[in-house]
Length: 403
Ligand SMILES: Cc1ncc(COP(=O)(O)O)c(C=O)c1O
Image 1 (cartoon, rainbow, N blue to C red):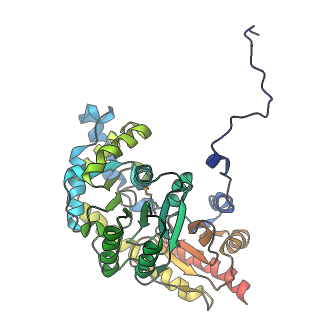
Image 2: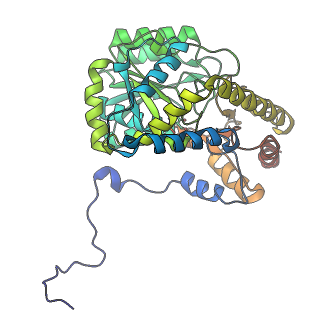
Image 3: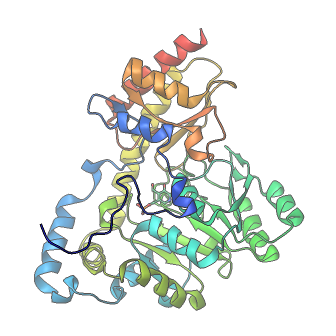
């Protein structure tokens, strides 16, 4: 026992959290996801790449070479310039021309979105997103308590640009940003047509609204490849890319293409987060790109995922009851399924877990809790046999419900 005076605090008293943090609570979705993580559950829920398709050997060799030959790889240091050169080449292949000064390296696309939200948003800013959108973006922006305007998206060719134009022209104040995923939208799987990309670019310019183009699935196209919006408009578009789905998400290497004038502000925001210390994975990815044929690797990824897309499409045709609709995605790793009106996808998920040990993500996860009748199925992580079995199990529950 020491004699120092100790402040007496009631045992249940804890620090007061920010107003936003006080509202954080486990959602039904998180509870469902926790059950989906059980080994007995066949999961079509998460957006994971197939680990057997990631280049383990080449990455481990690159990691070893970097660690042995480059002492500053473990040091605090500035972003790795040679990697930016590689990224610029990748971008040029898609039709995006930009100087190295516009490329800003991040810890994956998620951090890129986080940094951009700090760059562009104020408390209660107005943001425009699609009715179904990426939950990681919705969650990170919620700390700004934004006013959210939503625009619907056609499963055929992407966001409704006419509705967006009306929304922008009637808005009482200018939105702080528009967030879109033109390639293989998560969760809808749809790829935006070139006509809509051109309209979007001109709307961003005309209404002077920054547009975030989030593109984690741009290399996973199975039909045609369409140039990014950033290739059409450079001043109002912030393009976000990542190696997560291509080389491995745990490398945490992504980037933003931003107007050069904003890169300095981004680097201060990033320094506040992590002091720019991701040098080692940046060097590993650079070494991998120096010594391997990325084009060959991507072709292999695309052909493997394309086969799984076909397997899932067949399984859906075989097992889904009538009234259930889907489009075959032209890229990415998800099918979006429209359920008959009135069917609650979260309730369906709970039934699927209880009765068939199979998981998917329900539409509530992508619509800030609002839309009920849709589900997202992943086809990159399960094997072809598993995904056919998973669709069969979901079909069994749906058939029994809709009888
Ligand atoms: C649309 C979208 N944006 C961003 C991310 C985050 O990617 P990263 O692993 O590079 O942070 C994901 C991950 O699945 C995603 O689907």
